[in-house]
Image (tube, rainbow, N blue to C red; front, side, top):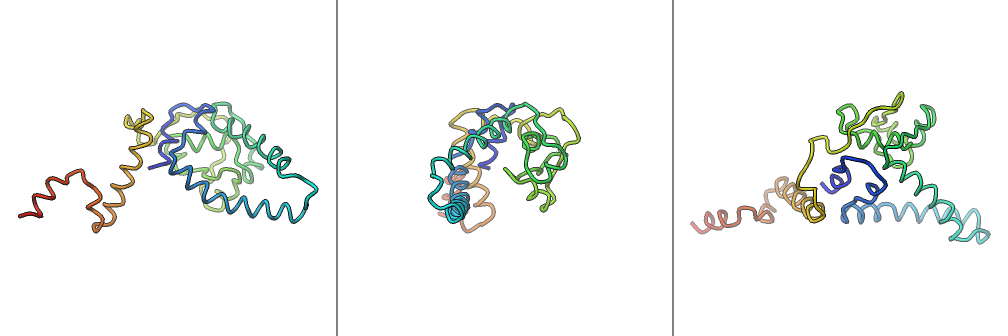
Length: 185
């Protein structure tokens, strides 16, 4: 439900990269922080104090930012079939945002396409494809406003949790008055 905020964009532009729900942002940060810590630890173990953290950050940040901007634009940049089995190109990420059925649940990896290859979710385009972006289910008017993008995923996630576990059904207060009347009989 939280990632739908990102995929609800029906046009890709650089701002789409930042269209992320705070819960998803926090989750991604929690998952990525240990990996980044291990990477930096390995880097400093190998290179010691000869390279500053600022230099490493500058060296890695600019290419990452540039590729992220291209991933969330309608500029088709493909690395070719061989490299796209290893690295995720902007074209592959655009495929991930497509609402076409053949593209559904494809190209999840942010950087390394071989992870999708292993998982069976890799889709390599044979050439430039005409893409329509947005949610597979169609336009969701509840995600048209900033308020909706912040509140609706929380509401839907709580509803899904309560439907999955009847013991927590009291969290769903959409019919609290009716439930209170039944319990007081």
